[in-house]
Image (cartoon, rainbow, N blue to C red; front, side, top):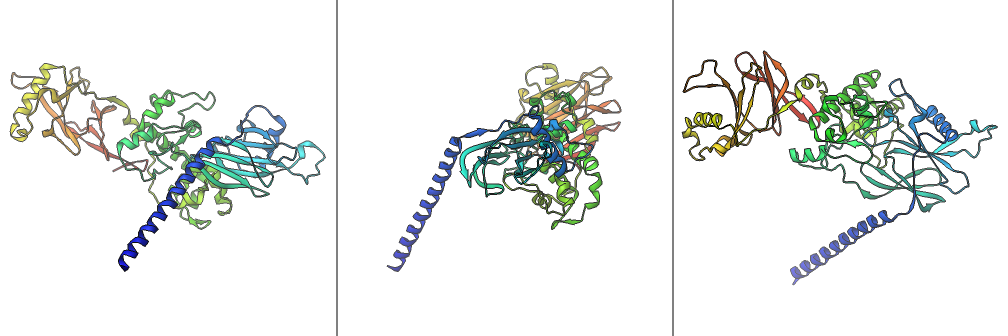
Length: 498
């Protein structure tokens, strides 16, 4: 009887827990519905008008932020909108700083500037302003009809979701997560590729690579257009794609994970060797309770902008730029500190872009017969899965530029395939062919069929790039045969040579 009571008690507890979970779930769903129905004024940032307010915002940023020769403060950097958020009859200046030094994967800096009521300035130009809201966000702010302590609540979006900010009588602070964003799921959450428990697979990586959001954060690394300007993928003046490495538009960039990896490596190099060159001395030193490192500083700069990171360091960790969901420089300095950074992709760049090999399984009957007979000599190895002629993929190409095509062949048969792919061969035509022998084998390897013939070459033979889900290989001609030149891995978003 006692055991039965215990079982009943456990059942009741279990049902209560389920009820609590269901109620919580229902409340979350209710919040989501309410978030879609929240009414208010959509802030629209203007970068050309409001000269008086623009000058006031310019002076505020000039006095409270440090800029450098790479990203000087320009009045045209500052987006302006006006709204009376506290209903006192005077409009506040809502600002958004589109300056590459203070922008990162979490957005750019914003402030709401309120006129200092205690100011006794004798001219409009000397009126002082105080910031009553600040953060690192996307340019998405809605001033809601609801109020707290006389101030309108704010609905603000950052890369992880929509948040309500409320004023405590002096400052706005994050009060509630309304809706979590899912745009970045499957792509890198930061500069070094830590994901939200997303399995490491090519398919997930490709989905992440092809994701963008409406605010201009692109691909696997959520790289923003300021970074793409600094790496010359986008022209700084015209804002047009430059055609670098064949990338002429956003769609091209999103479809090319290789270029995305190269672009972020180039950006890391610029961050460290240019933007942070005078901060190398802090590597391995403790600031604000965290030990700084090259990888940690690059990651934090990727998140909040390198000038934001400098502000953190200059103020010994007291000033910590936060975005809407309170992710901050200190957290990134800790989480991504201590990595060995290999951002020098120059050698890889020379070899990366070439021609994708597309194997033909229908044409080239004469070559197909030769390749079929070549493998028939090894029937004892494949008797379980006899080779069929339609399983032979053929790609004729003059890989050594001597005027005659070599035959690149891929045996897509279970007897020739394993966990790393299938058998890939290159046959070169003989200078003095016989009836029995017209080609000689110059390369053989087991790989996926994702193969590129690169523009680079050695001793007249073009290099090859063979892709693998975990490790790719560049092969170069050594005078007698193709030999392994370099192994390449892309670990946590960083290109590494093995």
